[in-house]
Image (tube, rainbow, N blue to C red; front, side):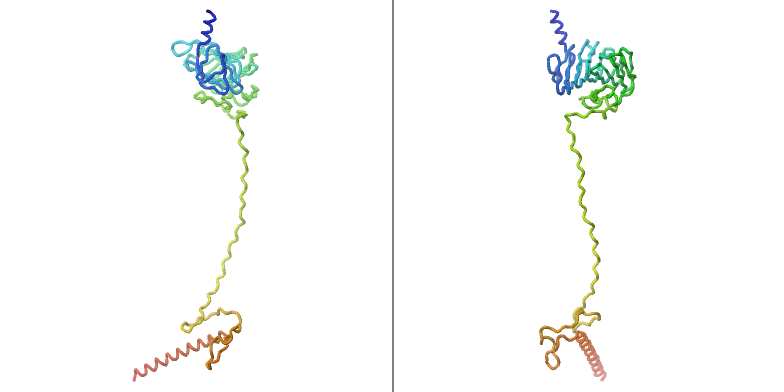
Length: 324
């Protein structure tokens, strides 16, 4: 009967899984989304696992890669809050966001000391040797170990403590803390190497994103290829302006006055290949077609002058007869 009562108490559900990535296991095997988690249940994650859990009072707990945590004590009352909620973190990475219960009801146990919650959101890491780091994200917290207590009051305040009692002063966190902890994957929710879902994932930062290690499952982008320089055509030579060619005069015609200027025939006269074809002399014999064009022009001018004199003599005779 006693063993049955203890099993019933141990099986008491205290919350449920809301996000599961890769592999997260409980006492009875793999944990799926919407599955219940129970008091005294040990939750473990694989080297790339991630689980997010929501407790009955609204408290949120994220469990990152390679972690092990036990829900040690959980005392629930009827006012949607808890009288006691204690978790024991053995190793790994975590994010905690308090729910609706009094701050004094929460307690997180680590190998190096105890984190006291004051209405708080914070990340913490527990190394293989028990070294513990706490980074405050909201509210306030206190870390107490064999070497005393440290208060975290400002956002991004950080404390590092060892199981032997050595403890650092509270100071603002920066990427160098990963060297101090000896693990580039510590505090993955701050560095961004693991991403949380929902409102719990919106908390954080503290300028730790630049410290995120490169994920092995993330493909590197191909190297940028330098653009091939486009071949430029040689500059085009500007076209030289064409020399203005003189207008060739119309061939001489008896009805049109002759315009002075150079004739379009600049070459010396050559005899025509066809003999007997050309103008005729007054005696009816065929003339020489190769005679100088200037003689032709003079004949043309003489013909025009004779026509002009005949017109004047005709006008004079007509006027004389009209006077008679």
